[in-house]
Amino acid sequence: MSLVVTALPGATFGGLVTAPVNASEIVSAAEASPVALPSLLNQFNGFLLIKGMSGLEDEPELLLRLSQVFGTEVESYHETRMAQQNVHPEIPEILMVSNIPPADRKPPPQPDPPHTADGCLPTQFPHRRGWHTDQSYRRPPPDASLFFCVVPAPKGQAQTLYANGIAAYEGLTPEMKTRVNSLVGIHAKPGVGRGEVAVRAGETPMKLGPGDQPQRQPVVRVHPETGAKSLYLCEAGQMDWIDGPFVDMEPGPDGEGAKLLYKLMAHYTKSEFVYVHDWDRGDLVIYDNRTLIHAATWFDAARFQRLMWRTTVSGNPGAEYAGEAKSWVIP
Ligand SMILES: [Fe+2]
Image (cartoon, rainbow, N blue to C red):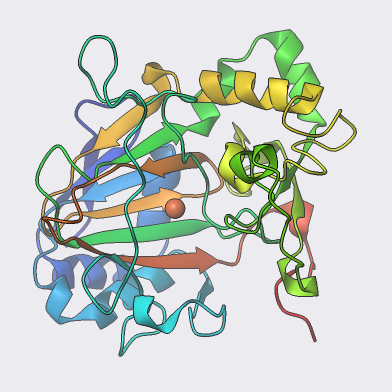
């Protein structure tokens, strides 16, 4: 059975897989034609939604097999020192993003104020915080992530927001394109005292080992398969606000670099570039970290449980990273 994908309703990018309709058939179809699904991911600007993957929660190895279609390496979260309680007990390539014990991932806070003036969910930076691309604090960074909903929070909570970096780059003025084309960002792991909030609060940054150092990344990434250019940026929590956020620009939270990052992130997260995904049980989203950023939203974790599984796929970061050793593995 071949894969059928249509444009994602309600979005300016992305594809919706409409056939086959169950998890094992989709995995079989993807494995039988291993370039099909990655090609469709490229065709639909790095975002695919597959609904009704029910049964996957009973066969987590299907998620691993599907992930392997998208790249040569699926991250083992044991090797990357992820807290054990957030890793699937049988499949170390599955991260459990959950507040269900023993997992202990807390949702982000609500934006301040919680809604826009017209009562909508805020999506644009800086009203919406937390925009990032997975693990940009590593070189080479990962290619794609697969995100599966095992237990959803109630509708209207715990949405995931995605923004299209290709359209955001194309939407820049010619002058701004020229300005960012050779710009380099400095990305830092969240929670190490180098993000905007920590720096403004005067926190002492953590002493980082050689495998956890902030990493430089091009602000404009060229997709290795399509050649498309996209904005490759995170907002304040995953950039380095001590030495950055940009190389060769005035550093720090009030520097010229920070002003430019605020401007670029506000542009990147305009509503025309953003898709809001409200999760149903059995939804699987495949997103390309080279071309999209995303952000989590709040849910009432005191009242509700939520369980998501995530895999992270690597292997084709592009010419920028050719032959490079993993920054987080120290021999
Ligand atoms: Fe993420």
